[in-house]
Length: 368
Image (cartoon, rainbow, N blue to C red; front, top):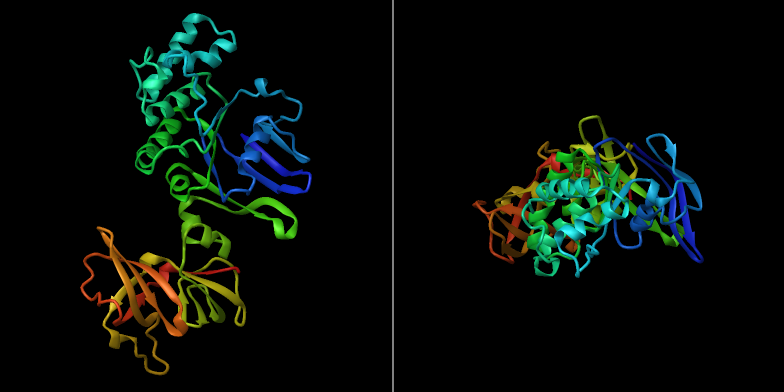
């Protein structure tokens, strides 16, 4: 439905977007994920028609939007601050856009009631928005965006002003509502957990100002694909992965890639890129991919086929309920962080030696 093709945008002395292209299918929730300055909100404004690209094309349902005014695009836009009118009640806020379009009063009433029922606020019509909680205000803003039946809904950090507990509660609700309506959506956030919970697909954006380039798409995929196979070291670090080491490919086959690293020889069950012996790569070990073995298990015989045993020392541990957050140090002082199940029987005391058995499926070879 939505097609963005080779879009560029810059302000004087500041590149913002660099050759951005992607498509969004009917009923799909696409999330633009990336750090501040990656151009996510500017891209949203270009799709909405509030900004013009320097080059490139935006089309919807096959129609070039270049000359189509904002009000004729029939796109909804929801902001982080909700932008509610404090002097109006809930009904007045949700009805505002419909009344501006000149819809008949009966239709306005019907659409407002349907939108409020969809966001679980039926019966709130005459409540003042200043009397509502932050989560309820967020639902009113969403209802106002849904009431005109937009062809595309764009959400710019819609949960950003809420506290963490409330955000966790509303993530699944927002996705469920969008899916119930079958609405195509473009969702902007810098929070990976929010993106993973809401999106069908994720576009991770990165600006390379050191190269004079604005934001571009570093990786696209489903939340599961992006988590399991980050395309580059930047993506892995942005997603919060800390266990990253550089190394040289020793051998590469369809089922496994062996890499010599400063902490030892690691065998990855999958590679995020084609690689050949001698290539310099980055190895990611996901934090849930380690189990603790007795320290003696770290001793390997020459030529042993047992792989991915990583000797080291426990630096610190912190109980997090279902798991321990464990910090370890390995050859050359390389630090690592792990999530060890709380039922792990062999977890030593800080300062003691330990050996970690690494799951091949949790190890991925990345591009630097």
